[in-house]
Length: 112
Image 1 (spheres, rainbow, N blue to C red):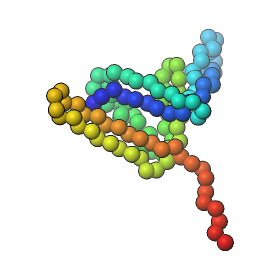
Image 2: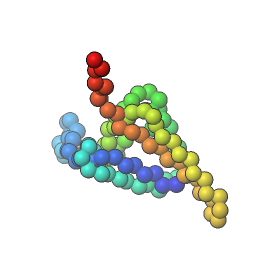
Image 3: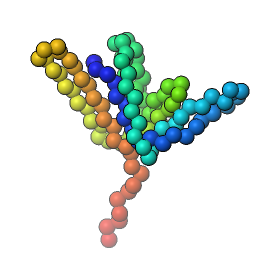
């Protein structure tokens, strides 16, 4: 599996943990700007991340990805895009990409 890319629209806003004397700030990623983080993980840690992500996808239509510095809540819609890309020439590489469209709360207009 290749590096994990996390992309979403972003707008920074501070979130202070209740009861914290240090007033630790965690940035909440919101719509308005682009945000991207890339990680190089061992297979066990990547698997754990994918399982937790999969459980959020299975159980609802919203997910949250977070670190100590930031959190990214995301309401996703359908259909979910899944791409599998295997490059077997030279040094073999398998890339798995998941694309989640944002959920819209819009409804269709009435037909009269």
